[in-house]
Image 1 (cartoon, rainbow, N blue to C red):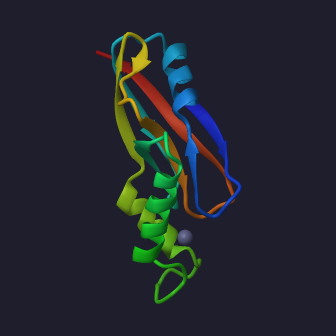
Image 2 (image 1 turned 90 degrees about the vertical axis):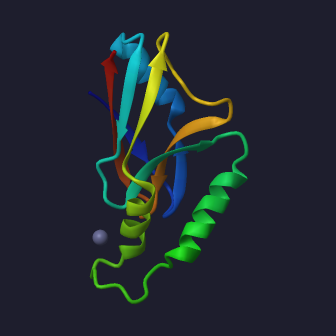
Length: 131
Ligand code: ZN
């Protein structure tokens, strides 16, 4: 298992980890198999989406924040229920296929850590398994 540290600087933020995760795949020595990317945080998430146009990230976060507004009518006393709910919607892990030592991703795809209660020091865990 490889741990990737992630330092976020905003409350809501996409962090492209594609290069770091590809590097973890390289270090594992696995040529064909799959890569598990896991976020061990309850107010953050991991997703795969477009990394060519950053306005896609703005649209995703903007719509999520409209669907799940910050700070009204929640039971959880910590004041970050919106982040917990958005984390549950997106999900905390992804599995990516590995072929020839490379992540199998679409042309416009990247793997993102999604911060929703930052800024914080975070981490993403990666495990690469052979077929
Ligand atoms: Zn909380």
